Length: 160
Image (cartoon, rainbow, N blue to C red; front, side, top):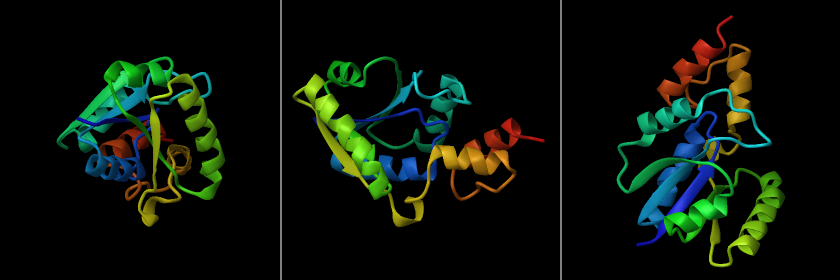
């Protein structure tokens, strides 16, 4: 059984993330969406419980999908789960250099791991959690960018 791990903060999950999840499930027997509890680079606006719940409500009914929190070094989590690959979404050429650095660093730390890059559908190629939060913060509609549960939570978070 080939297991892939799709890591991220998912703060919040977007329709682009969901697209990558569905694509990855076509390739792997099992997919673990690994939600980072914390990161020294990012300060999530939603708690880990909220982010896990958003994902469960959005894609929890998909077969062969597990949604789990993780903390610390990703390759340790991947190794512990017996996964064979890390899935990363590539939206644009600008993502490529950073993602290649991560892939090489992960392979240096854990030789047996592969990184699989998946591109979302064209309609989501511009989409990021940061962009969604900014649109919502300034009162714009995120209706077609995120699942309904996230749209509602963003409206509540940024009510003015």
